[in-house]
Image 1 (cartoon, rainbow, N blue to C red):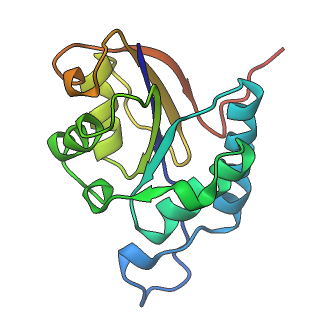
Image 2 (image 1 turned 45 degrees about the vertical axis):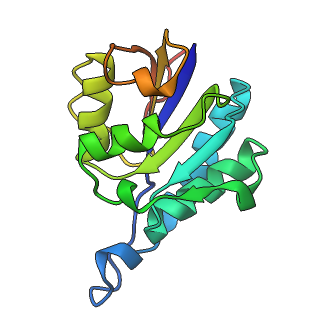
Length: 166
């Protein structure tokens, strides 16, 4: 069994129009939402074996803030350029290249690719993964190489404004 968490970067700032898209930082809401979503993962006792993030500033910052909440060593986050606005097939290649000793993998990137990736891998019909949204997919496979050849099961889909009513 392999478990994949697909995380869209938190809300980014548009305060500096001269900045390249790659260099846009998180805005105030993004800086608040990323640790909050990390706390939600910690409450579910999520313990990934590996975190791979787009090297874009907002995605890397989201990965760091979530890693801190789930006690994952920030220094162990891998930055992968193929996750920066990569195609679904290139993101699947990143996943497939993961070591099979990794049972739980978390990737951080951008839309629209992450929504398309989630739908492709799980057969779900999510319209849009909002900023700092997290999709959790289980695969009944022994190797990451098999991901994409067989559908996974969308276990959960959470995002900052998803407040459960009691």
